[in-house]
Image (tube, rainbow, N blue to C red; front, side, top):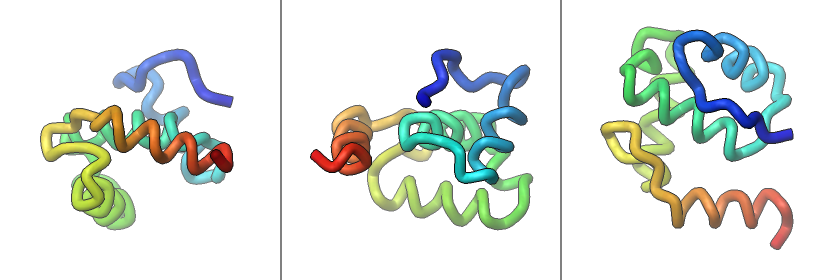
Length: 83
């Protein structure tokens, strides 16, 4: 289920826990990494987060400032739902 709240300092741990448990939809994962890139926290967490952030940036889904590219996100969501 997609979370309705934006990622922020007060709930980022919940998002990370869901991500690590594999219990997160694409939209929430992208929202999480957008926040982690904006705050540069992805580079302070374990290496996986920095590498994943770099891959997401390289794929053009999120820019280096953490802004989500809406068209790319829509493509990912369609793929997730088999459309």
